[in-house]
Length: 268
Image 1 (cartoon, one colour):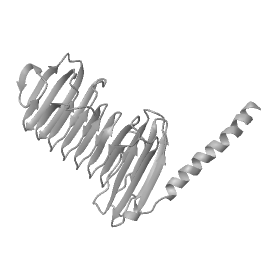
Image 2: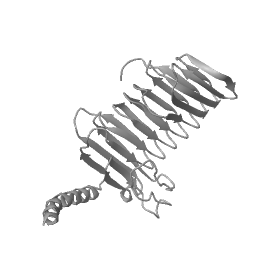
Image 3: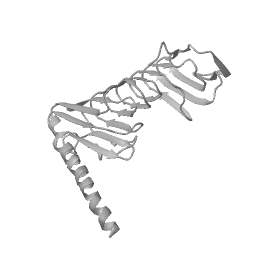
Image 4: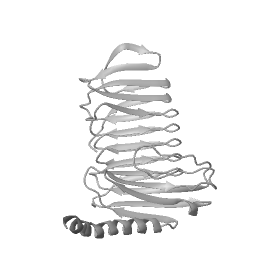
């Protein structure tokens, strides 16, 4: 009897979730809108293929996601919203066939299967979220911008630049593009890596930074506003050293580009 009573109480909730998911799936015009709420410290993930991702914070307690689709065959691209225990994932889904590949399933996490060829269709994501949420933006061909964030930021592109500012810390990775990141906190655990292949890297870090650092640049200069105690000198185009008391690890890698480590000019 108890099980039947609990089951009956859960059915309306399950029905509401299914109804909401269906509503999201039906909103598939040239401009897609989604809004929702998450508890503090949950994550909003955006996964794209062709197009920019622009995120900023809002004083409202609601997340707002807009996806503008453009270009030939843009109507074939669908936007999928997947809630999960730690937050919500929003993906641009390219179907197989006309694009020479497909994105596969929309799933939470860092991995994103994308073997889409060409850039016939583009999706521009604009995201507004409260400062108490984490953010992840991943795209293949496009820039990722996340300004004035309040929690951890994860930004990834293949062909595009990354620009991030957060009162916490950020992980950024691109292949063809520059990285500019301003962090207000250096309390990450383990190793924080910032990497590009063809592009310069500029990091602004808090004045009280304590880290074991590793810089690497094949074709570019390395500079730091922080005094660095170099251990073992320079080995080729690599430098290992300590800022402040050391402890946590900061790895900054690029091949073709300069590396600059600056002190933050002010609060974020």
